[in-house]
Length: 114
Image 1 (cartoon, rainbow, N blue to C red):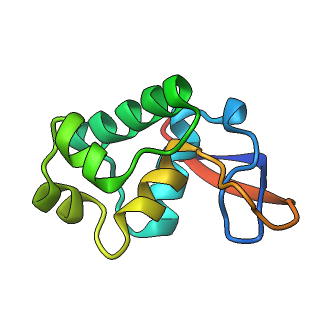
Image 2 (cartoon, rainbow, N blue to C red):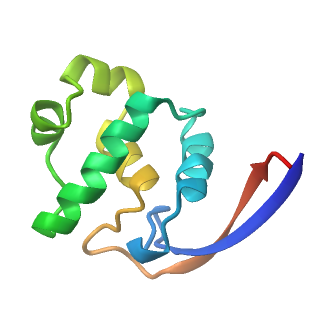
C-alpha cells in the first residue's frame, strides 16, 4: 500500500477553504477523520448531490433539503453520517463554511492501493 500526501487549505474547524481543490481522494481522507470510512455508494450519492446543489444555489443545502431531494431519507442520512451529518457531509463534499476563521494549510495522508 502506498501513502500519498496532499496539502489542502482548511479553516480552523477543518473545512476546505477552496472547494475547487476537492477530489474523491480528499473525501475518503475526510471520511477517515470523521470515522465514517469507507464511503459507500449511498455516501457518494449524498456527497455528489450536495456538491451539485451547492454549485447551483451557492449555498450548502439544509438537512431537510438533503433528506427530501438527494434520495436518502433523514433516518438513513443520520446512519451514514452519525452525530452531526451537516458537518460530516460538508467536510466530505469539500464545501467551505461562510465566516470561516483564518485558513491553515493541512496535510492529509491518503492510503492508495498500488
